[in-house]
Image 1 (tube, rainbow, N blue to C red):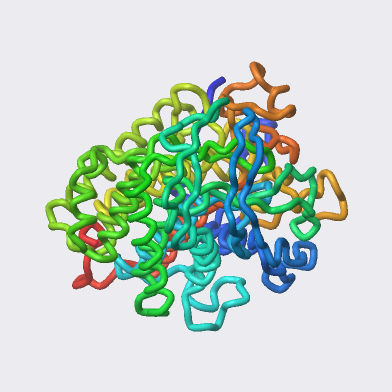
Image 2: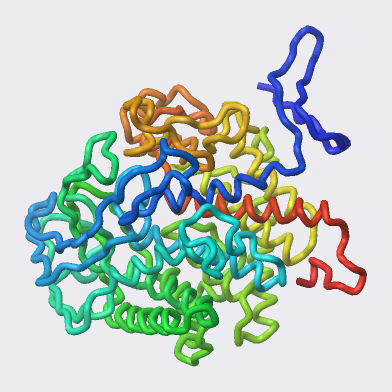
Amino acid sequence: MAVHRIDFSALRSAGTYHLAVGNVRSRAFAVSPTLYDRLRYDSLNYFYQSRAGAPIEARWAGGAGWARPAGHRPEIARCVAGPDGHGNIWPGCAYSLDVTGGWYDAGDQGKYVVNGGIALWTLLDLYERSRALGRPTPYADGKAALPERGNGVDDLLDEARWELEFLLKMQVPEGTRLRVPVGEKRNAAGLKFEEIDASGMAHHKVGDARWTPLPTPPHLDREPRLLFPPSTGATLNLAAAAAQGARIWRGIDPAFAARCLAAAERAWAAAARNPEVYAIADFTGSGGYGDQDLGDEFFWAAAELYVTTARAEYRAALGSSSWFRFSPAPELGWNRVASLGTISLALVPNALAAEEKRRLRGSLVAAADAFLGDIGRNGFGVPYAPQRGWPWGSTSSILNRSLILALAHDFTGEARYRDGAIAGMDFILGRNPLDRSFVSGYGARPMQNPHHRFWTHQLDPTLPPPPPGVLSGGPNSTAMADGVAAGLKGRCAPQACWVDDARAYSLNEVAINWNAPLVWVSAWLAEREERRRAGPPPASGPSESRS
């Protein structure tokens, strides 16, 4: 197939256009300088609408169709116990926890600390980037549709705090001893359980005892809610997220900041004491999110704690990590979090030497260069060319690359990084082999039927379609796990292995860690356009390449 790219850079008038070649006329398309203005708010509103433990109100959700009663309020969860899928008997624990709140993770109603960690970091990093570069924050109080608006706190922080409060609730109480497998990376028959001091660790997740059918709105979920055993990975996510929160809220809510820092340091100590407790409990009703390599989590947590405290203990942990010396920076993902620490160290003011900060920025720019190299490996100009097929959640991989490309542009001022970030978003919004936008409500042919238990109009006409600003997981040619996707296997090119169907969870699910980079990148692009419309800064002001 021949692919042609048409350059519209000379066009100066907004409006609706079409292309004509002979007697062939394209569908209409819009050209506008405000393309991302609403997307940054709609994509953030996804998180409000994913809140657990709170009623979703029509006035904040965009209409009565998306309103719903609170789900899982209160949410008092006991520890999972009994035989797993391999016959191992898990002993459970002697307590239950009130874990009301947080965000539902994806199309199901589980809440996972390791996915909450990266999603929360991404939103908070957007706030910290604005502060570090001296820019207005994109969600100043009153700009977003949230019940907390008008409280004098940035709206992005109001939304992020909803999740951070939940993560704090997932911490194991002091004085707790639990029996868990130690050093076991896979679940199999015959697991050996050891007693550990689990104080300060984080439970890996909370979810349903059994999978609920599709659809099941949250307030109609009748399954028991279960806490899963603590894991080192979840504990380090809590340490990192709480440390980041501690420095951000220090000047906003000192008591909350102190609570966050105490939790972060307890979690770090607990992970150091129990470095090999992996998430392997095999029960139905929720996703696994198991990770067998935690070196990047230790680095990320040490980085956030060092930025917040400047303490020698965390600096020593950084120095002993291979990720501190690694170049270029690695890909981002819920189980690939080293670059989160690199970005915080390179961007947020901290006690590192200037030369070390320059080196870390250089590793991010080197990663951006590698991403740009992928543009020539596909016909649609996207900075993404996986060698072994397109993975589950490919759209988030593209947006996370756009995030690093955007930072490379912030650090260097070079237009090629800006253009690369835009190319990633172009693919997401419709410049792709399917001519489909993977974001609901955006583009000429947007996604309409996500795998979700409430936004499921396709399966139940009384339920709503997705609100605008929801990101589909996108093309997936490597893990076509559901029946709909299996029907495409061997019949689609990797970039085209996608269908807009609520039953296709491996192609069309939604998730907090996917929508978070959509928020970050759309806010960055909207800011750039606002700055362009405002004209050049005064001659005496700092240039972007030095910021």
